[in-house]
Image (cartoon, rainbow, N blue to C red):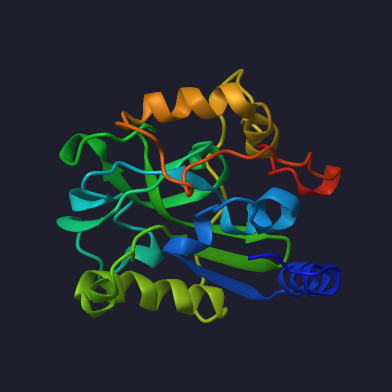
Length: 227
């Protein structure tokens, strides 16, 4: 998916001016060249990008758990549950730059590459606008699950401005700066791509969906806020 220049400008103005975004699963996936690769604002809006996940099988059971039971956007969401999905690995872990709501327990499904924390659902505040995203929801049957519906209900309410919540990122550890995911991703290149396939434990030739592409350097105003 690629927007044209007018669409990019309109989306950014809408969000920064107080609009809301709700993204599901595939919005965080990069197939070949995607909007993440050419539009730093879109990368920031979603919060992360995935170009790989454990395979054989790609959809498998895993445990997910709420990061902060007191946060308004997880009210009514089961604290810990095992469910089946496609578990995205992030090219750059978004945890330092977003408010993580739900995490994956990689040890419960095997083959994960991010370690802990491994964010699955998160929210952000971008100027006057709001963003909510979950990487869960690969299978159509997911959308009949009470678990998914509960978190989506809260995410939609937040994106629409009907539910207030603190979606600021966590403060960085003392003496450390949050990584800029756009620039880290841009350093992968061909050798990074080969290394990532080995890191994810793939067997045989990776399919055409699992490849890294260089990320354009962001404009100054689009780097995630450091606190």
